[in-house]
Length: 335
Image (cartoon, rainbow, N blue to C red; front, side, top):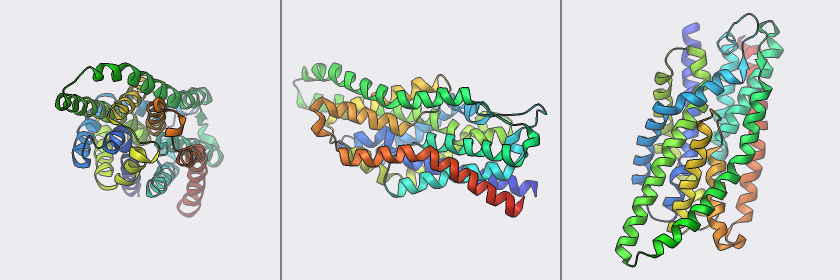
């Protein structure tokens, strides 16, 4: 039975990471594809390579936060994540299902919010059904994470706006049109690669933190597992959300696409250094808005933005409730 549970945990973890890869690929290449600077096929190749690099080199930072920083062992020292495996499976399924629904509808939701919400629901469920474990929920850590969620899109928007204002005059000095286009292509590919690296570092920790805590051992192995799942999600199921980010919010020109990609990439990477899993979707949408605002507020589609913001607000709440409900059912049926 223990072997079966371990297989189920791995499958649930793969499901989460696959969905996160599908939803978050747009966040590093959507603007470039929308501006018709980079092809979809080339973009996916870049994403897969740099997802892997980011996951292996820095994925452990968020992995530790999600797996150990929110739910902590009680006085007994028993690991609550592995002590109640069905509840852990429920949290992974809940996060994956909500991200899957958003991806089907082309909404770039916060996959980090989904996973954090599911982990909170997991903590509530363990405390209710297994009070003897004495598991704790680190609310001070959650406060820091919630604060970063508020700062993230604004910081990305400001970065993209400033990058646009800095880079645009420099690029206008290039009078040769062919050289101008070549420089832009190189800049956007570099920004997309940096974005994929940052997202790999952010997302692999977010999606596999529970798995790493459940199994223990070297985080690099879990990071590789997560990176492969993220990449498969990117290859198989990312196109619809890319269309939303690339042209559904505002139409970006080449310089705007570069500014948005670089601004969001820097913002995501900045928070990874502190082990804080932020929303890559918030970052790129904020950055796209920041780049779009150079043209004025009329350039931004407020209707599409309202749908995205509503999904953002619902995400941690729904994921938390789903995690608790699915776990309650699993423990009732199989526990």
